[in-house]
Amino acid sequence: MPEPTPAPPPAAAPVTGRQRLLNSLWPPRLTRAQLTVAVLLCVLGLGLAIQVRSTSDNSALRGARQEDLVRILDELDNRTKRLEDEKRRLENQRTELESSSNQAAEARKQTAQKEQQLGILAGTVGAQGPGIELTVSDPKGLVEADKLLDAIQELRAAGAEAIQINDVRVAADTYFSGAAGRVEIDGKKVSQPYRFKVIGKPQDLEPALNIPGGVVQTLEKEQAGVSVQRSEKIIVDALRPAKRPDYARSSSQ
Image (cartoon, rainbow, N blue to C red; front, side, top):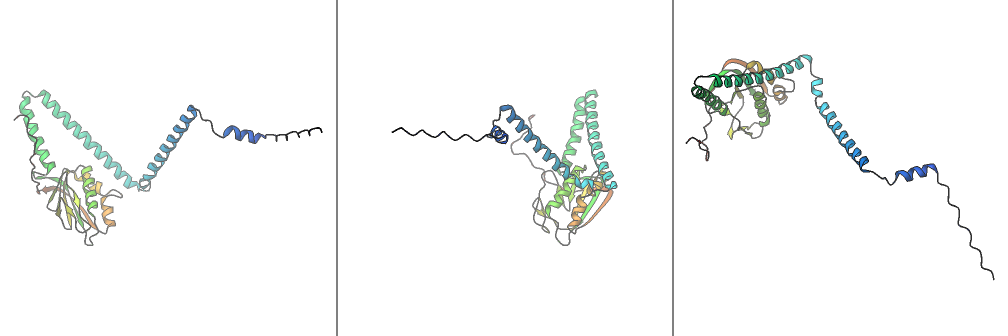
Protein backbone atom coordinates (compact mmCIF):
# COMPACT_ATOMS: atom_id res chain seq x y z
CA MET A 1 0.00 0.00 0.00
CA PRO A 2 1.62 3.33 -0.98
CA GLU A 3 2.50 5.73 1.85
CA PRO A 4 0.53 9.00 2.00
CA THR A 5 2.35 12.10 0.78
CA PRO A 6 2.84 14.71 3.58
CA ALA A 7 1.02 17.99 3.09
CA PRO A 8 3.25 20.98 2.30
CA PRO A 9 3.81 23.45 5.21
CA PRO A 10 1.58 26.52 5.25
CA ALA A 11 3.06 29.54 3.58
CA ALA A 12 4.49 32.18 5.99
CA ALA A 13 2.45 35.34 6.30
CA PRO A 14 4.06 38.26 4.52
CA VAL A 15 5.97 40.67 6.87
CA THR A 16 4.61 44.21 6.75
CA GLY A 17 6.71 47.37 6.80
CA ARG A 18 5.43 48.26 10.30
CA GLN A 19 6.56 44.88 11.65
CA ARG A 20 10.00 45.32 10.10
CA LEU A 21 10.26 48.78 11.73
CA LEU A 22 9.30 47.39 15.17
CA ASN A 23 11.75 44.52 14.80
CA SER A 24 14.55 46.97 14.05
CA LEU A 25 13.74 49.15 17.08
CA TRP A 26 13.10 46.50 19.75
CA PRO A 27 14.99 45.21 21.55
CA PRO A 28 17.14 48.35 21.46
CA ARG A 29 20.74 47.95 20.45
CA LEU A 30 22.59 50.91 22.00
CA THR A 31 26.13 51.67 21.11
CA ARG A 32 28.51 53.32 23.57
CA ALA A 33 28.21 56.65 21.73
CA GLN A 34 24.39 56.55 21.89
CA LEU A 35 24.49 55.75 25.61
CA THR A 36 26.87 58.67 26.23
CA VAL A 37 24.58 61.06 24.35
CA ALA A 38 21.57 59.85 26.38
CA VAL A 39 23.39 60.49 29.68
CA LEU A 40 24.44 63.97 28.55
CA LEU A 41 20.88 64.82 27.54
CA CYS A 42 19.63 63.65 30.96
CA VAL A 43 22.18 65.85 32.76
CA LEU A 44 21.26 68.80 30.53
CA GLY A 45 17.57 68.34 31.33
CA LEU A 46 18.30 68.26 35.05
CA GLY A 47 20.33 71.45 34.80
CA LEU A 48 17.54 73.21 32.92
CA ALA A 49 15.03 72.14 35.57
CA ILE A 50 17.24 73.54 38.35
CA GLN A 51 17.69 76.79 36.43
CA VAL A 52 13.93 77.16 35.94
CA ARG A 53 13.32 76.56 39.64
CA SER A 54 16.00 79.08 40.60
CA THR A 55 14.43 81.63 38.28
CA SER A 56 11.00 81.06 39.80
CA ASP A 57 12.45 81.65 43.29
CA ASN A 58 13.17 85.24 42.26
CA SER A 59 9.51 85.90 41.49
CA ALA A 60 9.25 87.97 44.68
CA LEU A 61 11.58 90.56 43.17
CA ARG A 62 9.56 90.66 39.95
CA GLY A 63 6.51 91.75 41.87
CA ALA A 64 8.37 94.37 43.90
CA ARG A 65 7.70 98.04 43.38
CA GLN A 66 10.19 100.22 41.57
CA GLU A 67 11.19 102.10 44.71
CA ASP A 68 11.78 98.76 46.51
CA LEU A 69 14.03 97.57 43.71
CA VAL A 70 15.96 100.84 43.83
CA ARG A 71 16.42 100.43 47.58
CA ILE A 72 17.67 96.85 47.13
CA LEU A 73 20.16 97.99 44.49
CA ASP A 74 21.33 100.76 46.81
CA GLU A 75 21.90 98.18 49.54
CA LEU A 76 23.99 96.04 47.18
CA ASP A 77 25.99 99.11 46.15
CA ASN A 78 26.60 99.95 49.81
CA ARG A 79 27.87 96.44 50.54
CA THR A 80 30.19 96.64 47.54
CA LYS A 81 31.48 100.00 48.74
CA ARG A 82 32.18 98.60 52.22
CA LEU A 83 34.23 95.77 50.73
CA GLU A 84 36.15 98.21 48.56
CA ASP A 85 36.84 100.43 51.60
CA GLU A 86 38.13 97.44 53.56
CA LYS A 87 40.39 96.47 50.66
CA ARG A 88 41.72 100.04 50.45
CA ARG A 89 42.35 100.12 54.21
CA LEU A 90 44.35 96.90 54.11
CA GLU A 91 46.36 98.15 51.16
CA ASN A 92 47.16 101.34 53.08
CA GLN A 93 48.32 99.31 56.06
CA ARG A 94 50.61 97.30 53.84
CA THR A 95 52.02 100.48 52.32
CA GLU A 96 52.67 101.97 55.76
CA LEU A 97 54.49 98.84 56.87
CA GLU A 98 56.61 98.80 53.75
CA SER A 99 57.49 102.50 53.84
CA SER A 100 57.79 103.11 57.59
CA SER A 101 61.29 103.90 58.81
CA ASN A 102 60.54 102.04 62.00
CA GLN A 103 58.62 99.02 60.87
CA ALA A 104 58.66 97.37 64.30
CA ALA A 105 56.96 100.38 65.97
CA GLU A 106 54.43 100.64 63.17
CA ALA A 107 53.68 96.93 63.43
CA ARG A 108 53.10 97.24 67.21
CA LYS A 109 50.78 100.21 66.63
CA GLN A 110 48.70 98.32 64.10
CA THR A 111 48.69 95.25 66.33
CA ALA A 112 47.27 97.29 69.23
CA GLN A 113 44.58 98.71 66.94
CA LYS A 114 43.75 95.23 65.69
CA GLU A 115 43.52 93.95 69.26
CA GLN A 116 40.99 96.67 70.07
CA GLN A 117 38.95 95.84 66.98
CA LEU A 118 38.95 92.13 67.78
CA GLY A 119 37.91 92.90 71.37
CA ILE A 120 34.89 94.80 70.05
CA LEU A 121 33.97 91.93 67.74
CA ALA A 122 34.43 89.38 70.52
CA GLY A 123 32.37 91.48 72.92
CA THR A 124 35.08 91.75 75.59
CA VAL A 125 35.35 95.55 75.41
CA GLY A 126 32.73 98.28 75.20
CA ALA A 127 32.12 100.35 72.11
CA GLN A 128 30.34 103.48 70.98
CA GLY A 129 29.60 105.10 67.67
CA PRO A 130 26.85 105.86 65.17
CA GLY A 131 24.20 103.24 64.53
CA ILE A 132 20.56 102.40 65.10
CA GLU A 133 18.21 101.27 67.84
CA LEU A 134 15.79 98.52 66.87
CA THR A 135 12.92 97.89 69.29
CA VAL A 136 10.68 94.84 68.91
CA SER A 137 7.62 94.64 71.16
CA ASP A 138 5.89 91.26 71.34
CA PRO A 139 2.89 91.61 73.71
CA LYS A 140 1.23 88.47 72.30
CA GLY A 141 4.36 86.34 72.64
CA LEU A 142 4.40 85.21 68.99
CA VAL A 143 7.97 86.10 68.01
CA GLU A 144 10.16 83.01 67.79
CA ALA A 145 13.87 82.98 68.60
CA ASP A 146 14.78 82.35 64.97
CA LYS A 147 13.15 85.65 63.95
CA LEU A 148 15.52 87.52 66.26
CA LEU A 149 18.42 85.52 64.86
CA ASP A 150 17.37 86.55 61.34
CA ALA A 151 17.54 90.18 62.46
CA ILE A 152 21.08 89.65 63.76
CA GLN A 153 22.17 88.02 60.50
CA GLU A 154 20.70 90.85 58.42
CA LEU A 155 22.40 93.48 60.57
CA ARG A 156 25.75 91.69 60.31
CA ALA A 157 25.39 91.49 56.54
CA ALA A 158 24.72 95.25 56.49
CA GLY A 159 27.97 95.99 58.33
CA ALA A 160 27.06 95.96 62.02
CA GLU A 161 30.23 96.04 64.14
CA ALA A 162 28.77 95.67 67.64
CA ILE A 163 25.32 94.46 68.75
CA GLN A 164 23.63 94.28 72.12
CA ILE A 165 20.12 92.94 72.85
CA ASN A 166 18.79 94.18 76.16
CA ASP A 167 21.75 93.41 78.47
CA VAL A 168 23.30 90.59 76.40
CA ARG A 169 26.28 91.23 74.11
CA VAL A 170 26.06 89.46 70.76
CA ALA A 171 29.23 87.81 69.43
CA ALA A 172 30.17 85.30 66.75
CA ASP A 173 29.21 82.28 68.90
CA THR A 174 25.94 83.73 70.24
CA TYR A 175 23.01 81.33 70.06
CA PHE A 176 19.25 81.73 70.45
CA SER A 177 16.90 79.18 72.01
CA GLY A 178 13.51 78.86 73.65
CA ALA A 179 9.97 79.07 72.37
CA ALA A 180 7.98 82.18 71.46
CA GLY A 181 7.64 84.47 74.47
CA ARG A 182 10.47 82.67 76.32
CA VAL A 183 13.50 83.55 74.23
CA GLU A 184 16.96 82.89 75.60
CA ILE A 185 20.23 84.33 74.30
CA ASP A 186 23.36 82.39 75.22
CA GLY A 187 21.25 80.60 77.83
CA LYS A 188 20.06 83.85 79.43
CA LYS A 189 16.35 84.66 79.31
CA VAL A 190 15.47 88.02 77.76
CA SER A 191 12.03 89.56 77.90
CA GLN A 192 10.25 91.79 75.46
CA PRO A 193 10.48 94.44 74.29
CA TYR A 194 13.72 93.35 72.64
CA ARG A 195 15.99 96.39 72.31
CA PHE A 196 18.80 96.08 69.78
CA LYS A 197 21.70 98.54 70.09
CA VAL A 198 23.67 98.32 66.87
CA ILE A 199 26.84 100.21 65.91
CA GLY A 200 27.49 100.70 62.22
CA LYS A 201 26.56 103.00 59.37
CA PRO A 202 22.92 104.01 59.97
CA GLN A 203 22.38 104.62 56.26
CA ASP A 204 23.25 100.96 55.64
CA LEU A 205 21.62 99.32 58.65
CA GLU A 206 18.15 100.86 58.45
CA PRO A 207 17.45 100.06 54.76
CA ALA A 208 18.66 96.49 55.29
CA LEU A 209 15.89 95.94 57.86
CA ASN A 210 13.19 97.53 55.70
CA ILE A 211 13.72 95.71 52.40
CA PRO A 212 10.59 93.94 51.02
CA GLY A 213 10.12 90.65 52.82
CA GLY A 214 12.85 91.57 55.27
CA VAL A 215 13.09 91.71 59.05
CA VAL A 216 10.53 94.45 59.70
CA GLN A 217 7.83 92.94 57.49
CA THR A 218 8.44 89.45 58.89
CA LEU A 219 8.12 90.64 62.49
CA GLU A 220 5.02 92.67 61.70
CA LYS A 221 3.41 89.51 60.29
CA GLU A 222 3.91 88.03 63.77
CA GLN A 223 1.86 90.98 65.11
CA ALA A 224 4.94 92.52 66.70
CA GLY A 225 5.58 96.23 66.97
CA VAL A 226 8.81 97.33 65.29
CA SER A 227 10.59 100.68 65.37
CA VAL A 228 13.97 101.64 63.93
CA GLN A 229 15.72 104.89 64.89
CA ARG A 230 19.05 106.25 63.77
CA SER A 231 21.46 107.74 66.27
CA GLU A 232 24.87 109.37 66.09
CA LYS A 233 25.91 107.83 69.40
CA ILE A 234 25.05 104.25 70.31
CA ILE A 235 26.69 102.87 73.45
CA VAL A 236 27.22 99.11 73.66
CA ASP A 237 28.39 98.39 77.19
CA ALA A 238 27.36 94.77 77.84
CA LEU A 239 30.53 92.65 78.01
CA ARG A 240 31.36 89.00 77.58
CA PRO A 241 34.05 87.37 79.71
CA ALA A 242 37.33 86.82 77.91
CA LYS A 243 38.05 83.11 77.57
CA ARG A 244 41.59 81.89 78.14
CA PRO A 245 42.73 79.06 75.87
CA ASP A 246 43.20 75.68 77.51
CA TYR A 247 46.09 74.47 75.41
CA ALA A 248 47.34 77.24 73.11
CA ARG A 249 50.31 79.30 74.24
CA SER A 250 52.21 82.12 72.55
CA SER A 251 55.10 80.75 70.51
CA SER A 252 57.30 83.62 71.75
CA GLN A 253 57.21 82.33 75.34
